[in-house]
Image (tube, rainbow, N blue to C red; front, side, top):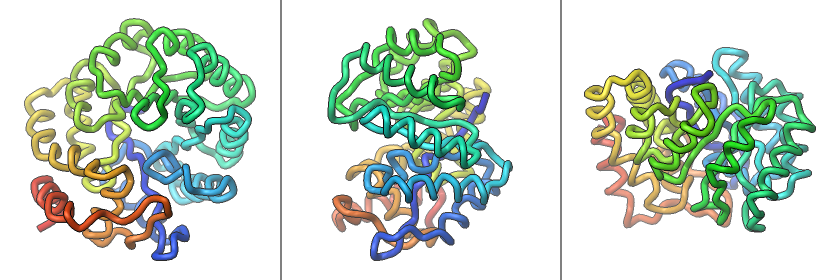
Length: 292
């Protein structure tokens, strides 16, 4: 079971919105050096919604090749059509990903039974460990604890990224699914308390900008070191909050460009961070110790 800080990795792009493969490789090496526990390429933060399917598959394959077994690669393979999700999951398996992260189908608002059948179809079709991903604020679809419990009984469904920010929901999933079912916070602002309550780690946006400190924080929280975890979380809270001043990944890509890790490239309909938010995000970066 992977524990600690898992980065929901951005996809670097140039000013024309084309993928910057060199910067992607450099980010992967940086995360290995900084102690990040695992990476998730091509999730929400990786702009999966605006990449083509061939690009999506190529980013996963590139990540697997660069990492070369030095940390786990959990490929984002979600889609709002079950057949597309299966296609992406199969491609991730063929590329050598260690597991996949599959968001609930967005826009079409499936029933709870539809969600169960969606994930059941994926794990029946592809022999790859699967993490569920519940983020109703982005998908207009909330996967309830009853459904998670049903899915946890399926072979290859190994855990969930729970991004509601509802600590009671996380605790209910733990009580329903047992200790062998992995739970990862998908909400940086509440991740400290969820990990102290028994979650296994965080799949984090903040980890893009402060990977070393996020790793130290998550490791302390998972270990139950409340004092260390809370102190580090206080330093990171500005990032947890201000990396969502506009829709993710707009602020995090701007922040990474500020510290010279990527160029300021993003794809429409996403735009660069509005100037009115620049100083607030700089202040949060200074508080976290990533900007002088």
